[in-house]
Length: 253
Length: 253
DNA sequence: AACACCTGTGCGTTATTCGAACTGTTGGTC
DNA sequence: GACCAACAGTTCGAATAACGCACAGGTGTT
Image (cartoon, rainbow over all chains, first blue to last red; front, side, top):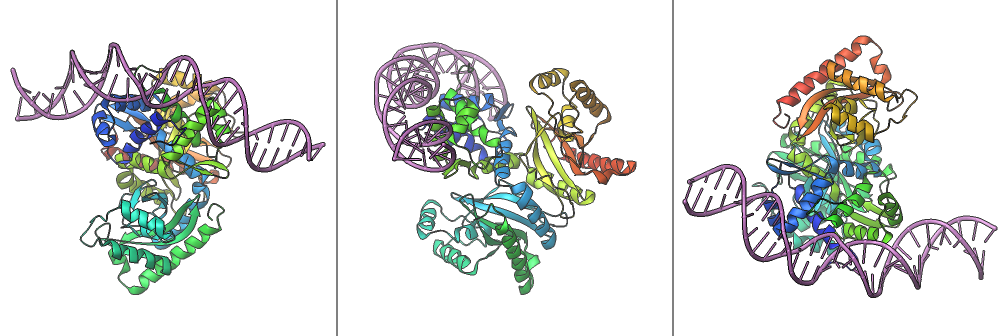
């Protein structure tokens, strides 16, 4: 049931567009019809509109996104001054840490990377980019972004999201995850090992709010990077300084 | 007049969404109505749909994009394997060049950055990010992406686009720009100084086609970086090697 | 040949959308 | 305080865009 006064056909169309978040090279109209639950003819009309307006291209394998969607994403990044103020800072931090560093924000039931830097000397990459969506419950940036949320928000998230077993080390007990989120909030950092990717460790610290979304800065690297206890402290120190520098930018509140 | 069998309301809505490419922090419905030419009530309904579906948020200053659009852009990047295969390569090249390096593709009447790397030691950044849209006629990546286009495509572009005076050094004579595009095609590189940004020089070389769009790899740096004639040759050599490595990836054809 | 899957098309029906007109709020100026 | 500009919210009758069912065709596989 849509709110009075909006456009239901447009809303349906946006659901079709959102199907392309899945990292699939191309989709058939039949697949999209199944994903959205819309009638085949409805799906076809909406897909044709996306092709006409330049958001999709129609190839032999099916429908694919064009770079046009990137241009709108670029509008979000420019509006939030990511390129001029956040990126150079992350580039410096990545150099200091010799690891991938990212700024992520919570968007509904996931965390999304809005900036990312990886110096040439960093060895590990999981292939994430600006725009990558990460699970809230199983990543350092995800849990840290929940750290400042009201209990009813957290309750809602646990109602909608079931824990997922990404690796053998993934914690899947909801109560333990909740407790860890609360601890992250108290200690102002999150550190996870191999919960989301085998062989990978991740740390995150809170930054503040970016245009209404909780923002955190984090790093992902290989496990052996944290062989000594003081390795984590050193990393967190650098991330905290990064967060402090980020907070000085006018885009955070 | 829409093609038979597509959805005009959805197409209108997508025009509203496309307004947010402009790097403005927020927009009023009145501004969007002016930008699109739609009736105020129509604009309002379409905007409400974007808010309901989570693409926009409504704040005191007006409507702003949420990170949701980034997630779809992330789908494009993941579908094209940008994070796992292109980005590490650009990171390495950026380290080698000590400069910002980007992969751009032509999308209609502009070039869009799909990947970008800037090592911590690079001094210059213009603040562009993945998603930044650059003019075709006045940037190295833009002109180089036109290098492989058929004459009718180039004719169409010159019919739709008038040259713009970005700096005192910007070439605005269409015939001279055409001649330069042709020369870029012959010599397989483009090098421009201060045509788009004062104090900046840019070089680009072609890569191939990425999902139907012409892709080029380029670098932007300060003018004094090319004080000696052999400086450009060295940069082009590195970019050409990068292009060769990129072409080995299965995503280019 | 049969089957599964995907796509394209026509058309009667109706739900959605449109846009004009009216109303309300806010901030700035005099 | 009055007035104005700009923006936003709402209603509703009319028109049309969109829906979805049914039919038809193409392609690849067995």
